[in-house]
Length: 275
Image (cartoon, rainbow, N blue to C red):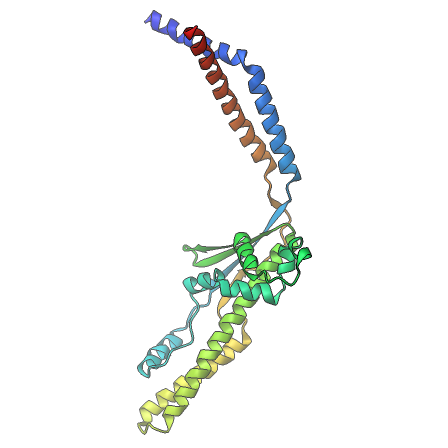
């Protein structure tokens, strides 16, 4: 038992002696790594993140019942907003393209790239850039959608969210009006061919619903979704995280230095044993 404890102490002392022998190497590696990480993090551009939270508008029971009647006549109802539809639209290329073109975001994304050839179509580059800084997250517990946008300028980060929500409202409003107008024209064409007063009453009710839907879509506010938490200009950067980067650099470089120290010691002993 005593021999085992002595061996453990000897092994531990050997490890300590190896670290003492190569402490200069470890110290140099840690110092260089920490200083380099600190300088790079300090010189890196500050990134700000704006956030917003929206919730899909719910369909009333009356509208749900009228939709069931509409299906009997073989017509489609204006799409009711739901989480999956909103998330898909927010991540879609078509919506991002509309946002980029309507609000002229290409010069903001590629200031340097436009100097050479300002007439080059960079729409796809803009979509890829926007996908990299714009995130959509579905919160299943609250049935809400959280949007976030990162940018070097805090106001532009908030503006990107404002632009996206504006274009999303326009898109869903226009689509609802298009479907409602199409349905209305179709239902009006059925009136003259139907003599049953009960069915005619149902058709008139459906026509009234299409008119109501079109009017609500025209108002736009809270038609497809509600803005629970509107975009605000962030007051603090999220990147670079200088302290965290320095701490990670210190830990990684320390372990790497220790590993190299023991590796050099092992190689040195292997060479001496061969001689």
